[in-house]
Each structure stands twice: as structure tokens, then as C-alpha cells.
Image (cartoon, rainbow, N blue to C red):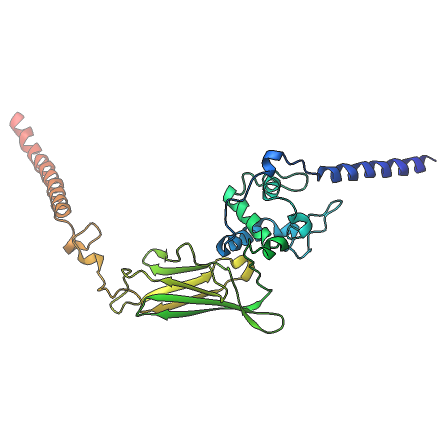
Length: 306
């Protein structure tokens, strides 16, 4: 009898706990928050940026947006943030939930900037069928691919760099990857100079084209070392191309050691340093000779006193 009572009590407590947790997932979004509107346009750049932020901060629990592969937590599993059931909410409601968190959902109020949160919402809206039909949101959907390939085409005369990004689908077709941010850098003496600009995102053909700075120097033949890579390496892996090209401004190299400067060799040291050094050496040796002279004079001075 006692065991039966314990079992019933345990089941009752489990029911109460489950109900309380489930209730904790009910959101009470203030009306003022619901009225918030996304201030950012649904551009390829913004959607791609939102996807990157989503993959880092949301994917581990919510899975791939629109795929239904959420983490199977109990008693309440995370929502599929790309589903129509979720996207029926307004932008302000989604923003509030990302910002405040509740229950198992952490708060991102201080973890993500306001812009980052809106970028995530912009990305999620790309799965909204109603928005797609009205063409209010640009759709950026890249299939799962392998063998990601980055190809460079450099026009030295026009000083243009074109990069193309593609991958192979499960069916074996090579397709362009759209909306992916590329980093384009030039190796300098003490690191890399980023020349990508703000719009280095692949278009629908997988291309990014940038204008190389006309005044960026290379060696005597204009050779520079270019490094182009996919910034979202957490998703696509390390994809990069390192190439030497004569796209730079031909420049005679200047050896800093040839100048009369602080870092120059002895012959090219600044005059004031040379004079200071010589003056210091003369002063020190002068003091030494003076001391020696005085020491030599001590016996004579002692005899004179006697």
C-alpha cells in the first residue's frame, strides 16, 4: 500500500513539473514589443549574415531552419524557427523572444547586438512562404554541398579580381553558392590588408568582383600576394586560395636600413645619435683618466705633507 502511494505521489509530482515547464514556454509578449518592425532590408548580404549568426548561436538547439531537425529536448523541444507555424509571428515578437529568453531558451540581450538579432530574423523570414510569394524577402537557399571550390580570375589590366564559389550536390551537380561572404586580402610586411569592402558576397552565379586599389604597391613587377577565403569556415570548412599576381603598382623596394634613421646601420645612424655616443664615450674616458691621474698624485701629495 505504501509503495502504491509513493508511485502515485511520484507520478503526480512528475505531472506537475512537466506542466510547469510546458507553461514556462508560453510567451507573454508585450503589445509594444509586438509592434516592432525590422529596420533592415531583406538583401542577400543581410540574409547571409543572419544565416552565419544563426548557425553559431541557434543551430545547436533549433537545428537547420526549416528542416525540423531540432534537438529532442524534453519535456518541450525547441521550435523549428524556419517553420510556417513559427513565422506566423511578427518580427517584434521574434525579436522579443531572442532578446529576453525564457525557460530553456537563453537570453541574447547582451550576447548579440540589435543588428545581429535583426539579421537572424531577416534570415528566418527567407523561409516564410507568404513573404516569398509577395517577393518581399529575397530567397537565399544553398543546397548541402561537398567539394567546395573557390576559383580566382584576375584581370591585371583592369585591376579586377573575380572569385567564383561552387560546390557539388548529392546528385553530383556542381552549383553556384549564393550569398556567401568572401574575404579578399593582400599580404603586407606586417600582416594582411583587407580589400574586400562591405559587399563581398557571392551573387546568384557564385561570383564576387572587386576593384583592386590602383595605388596599392607591389614589387618591381607589381607582384602582390593575394589571399581569398570563405569567411564562414565553420559551415564550409577551410576554403581559400593563395596566389601571387602582378596586379599591384610596380614599385622599387626601399630598404629602410639605407636611410639615416634610428633603425639604420652604424653608417646611417642619425647625426645626433653619433654625436651623443661620441660625447658620452669621451666624457666617460675623461672621468676615468681624471681618477687615474688623481690616484697617481696621491703619493706625491703625501710626501709634500710630510
